[in-house]
Image (cartoon, rainbow, N blue to C red; front, side, top):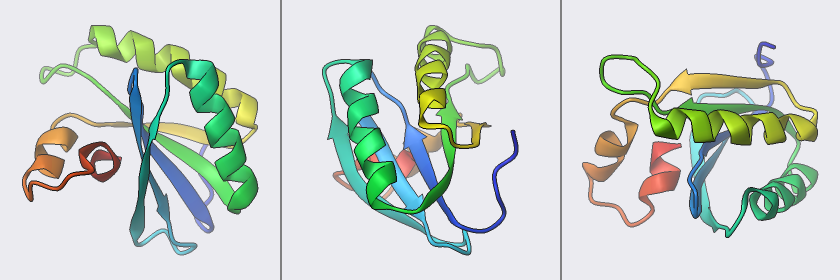
Length: 119
């Protein structure tokens, strides 16, 4: 399902214990970093995301898909795909994006909230 061209998009860099979060402006030109979500389980993460989507008028979700540099799936890819299945319960359009090298780009300025910058 394609993401709407207008409205706030929630972007996620899914992790096992920490998930990076950013939310776009309604024109989808600027992404605003949010606090990373610390979680002990996918269920705990889903509860937090459910609350976030109630607080903000989110129209879609964009999730980084971790792949090897050669473009092939990694062990992380499978874990993220499982989490994406659970994200579908939020009933929002959802799309993935290749996130190769996003963490390295986020590390460049040596910022503290790396996962949210990666998102």
